[in-house]
Length: 354
Image (cartoon, rainbow, N blue to C red; front, side, top):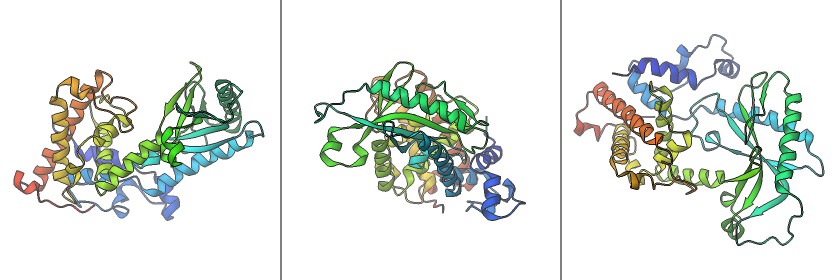
């Protein structure tokens, strides 16, 4: 069935915009989504397929991203009030907002709350002054104290304390969902050698299992930034496009945002070297996804996420998600070629300004 890209374009614009913030920013109370062309560079005045394609690759406007961080700061300012000489911590961010691959004006943001009582070390590093306390008990204290205070500090908001790894705050006076993630630093051998932050990991508390899970969000973002610089921004354009296609699909595409980033990351860098030939870029993405779907499962299931922490296709349902995502890309590619009136030969040369 042919996709209705006019409806998808409306959904995309609603997802990537907040009328209230635009009205506040521009002082224009009559703003509506129909006024969107005043604020963006469109591929076409009338062709919704072309506009959908270009706008899906574009980053969320910095107006909204700044507001996301502003809402996170409100939560941090409240958490600062529980700091004592014996319970101190610092903050970092992780997730799609922190690496500019988010596709929503109202994107969630993860605030890492990193306790300062101890630092975990990767083997074979040995602490010069071994910690005598209990790291799990310390993180549980941080978690439970945070839950109690945030529930009181944001009485109109929904403060969800049921998550294993995060306290979720949304609604009330908050314009964004903010996830508070108690954790501790994890110094890797590479960090110990170089003191470069991107090599530093964190351990996140699971409050039900009473265990810590190792994450490397800074290394993940570092790798994405290198890939994006090496492809003149085309890597993150494709990540946003694939996430948008998943969001607008009529089918359930069982791939997480993290999975989609990893799939795009594993496409050969040279295939991103298309300059402003974005339809050729989309053609390369389709060919890559098709090859990925057709390769033997033993090979596909051995492909890593960027930081090598796990395999991408670690669940059977992800193969179905891959094939459905591939079909979305194929349909968009065919629709674009038709809308521009291109032959397969001319696809190689069609430039589009973004």
